[in-house]
Amino acid sequence: MLFFVTFYSSKNPEKKYRSFQHNHCQMISKSFQRKLTWRGSNDPKAPLTESARRRPQKEKTKVPLGLFPHGLVMPAKKRQNDPETGKKNKKEKRDELAVINSDLRDESVQKGMRDAWQRKESYTNGDIQLDCEPFPHCQITHFLQSEGFVESLQAELLQLNFHSKSNDLYKFQQSDDLRERKEHHISQIRSVIFGEFRVWLSEVLQVDLEATVDISCAKYEHTDVLLCHDDELEGRRVAFILYLVPPWEVKDGGTLDLFSTDEHCQPVSVVKSLLPCWNSLVFFEVSPVSFHQVAEVLSEEKCRLSLSGWFHGPSLPRPSRYIEPPVPRHTHIPKDESLLFEWVNEMYLDPRYQARVQQEFEESSEICLPSFLQEEKLRQVRSALQSSEIQWEQKGPPNKRCYGCVDMQSVPSCVQECWELLSSESFFILLSNLTGLRLHYLCGDEDESENEDGKSETENGGGEGNTQASASSTDAGASSTEKKDKGPPTCVGELRRWTHGDYTLLHDSVKREYALDLQLHMGCAGWKSEFGGFTSYIAHDEDEELLTVYPEDNSLALVYRDKDTLKFIKHINNSSSSQLSSQNTPAFYDFSFNYYE
Image (cartoon, rainbow, N blue to C red; front, side, top):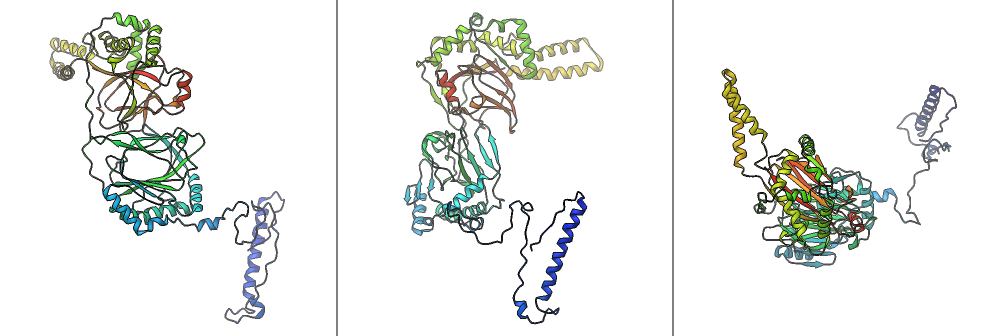
């Protein structure tokens, strides 16, 4: 119903409202009267008259341009595709349906895939490529028949709200779960994947897959990454990814990398990489050996957009968890204090300065000591580390760590001396003075001092206080006995090289215990936090970050962690390459030690 509304220029808002209400009611009244006279009588059962058969034409009304945001209200009519752009109108887009590749409906294709999957063999037919190495996986190009539908789906997904996700394992953007989204194309693809495609997949794999919907959208942009993992989680049976990417090349990064595994079901190295492709779907079986990663996106312009999720069903048998053999610890090396005076900045050998450092450390359980080594010694070690003499080896497995390490028996003498410094008896004593921890038998123990005080009071006192002091002395004595049972202070350390792509991950097999962590960085002048490579301390089973230690040239970082504190080193991304190349070095280095009371 169209009507003309007059807005007065009166400053009285009530008058303006009455004008609108009055005109509106008049139009409704006239419309109602016309309905009554169409049959030519007030009797609703009266036959239609000739004039009543011709519905009276509505008066042409003018609508002020400012009344509606889009100007004139035009009569509705079916829109045609824009002759220049060829774009479809909204109604036609709402009518688009998600239809999967017709090859999947071919019974011979289903049988061929089913037989190949059961025999762990390869199979290729048109747009379908099935391979069972290093673990069963399949890539289907042109997964959806309608290119227009895929384009509209991409547009809908890009309108979603994305949340930045970052921890030890990944960095990317993710949408909320899509199971409740009402948008047409998202609803369509969800219905097809967990309907027709799930039934087809169940038939091919001969596995009863549940109708559980588990799907979300992810955006990977420059430096985003998902590191090595196996997707293993109770109920997950098949993982899938539908790619909605622009033309993609190997140099853009972002490949889906598949890992080989060893006899312990631990990942070894990337043996196959799948390039993201527009409107292609990849699925693979989730198993104890399905280790994979999304390689870092190197392109600064392209967005790696995908839909991914899991089909749920009975999990495959899983072997017992492999636990790495512990790295042997050793007590201090018997070196005299002359080594300290040769290597360490004399400021840190001053007892008064040591007392100040200890007070600060006891308050925060962490401290960074800049300019720790003497400049001449620093230059010697740094130069030796950057030389080609040292043969670095990649340390894994990649589901736990990836960085360069070296056998200390094959390093230049100055590097060996620095290692001996950090392992020496005199350095254990220095650390005790700087932190207050009992890392040498000559260093006093506060608990033992309290025990002695309590014991004296008990011997000299009496009455009720005597009983309480005796109990306190017994508890403290038990604590002291427990510490004595630990044996002498020990340490374990390694020399590490850090370059683009390196990281460490949190994992369940790490032993949780009290320790003093030491890091002495070299060759990282001008390092920025956005490069990664920093050490992040977090609380166990929580996302809260407690402390971040950034690489700083010739800075000694000391952190005392308890049983509920874990740590990892953030993946070093491609942005670091320019910084390292400007220093004519491909990497930076650190001596990493753990000391135990």
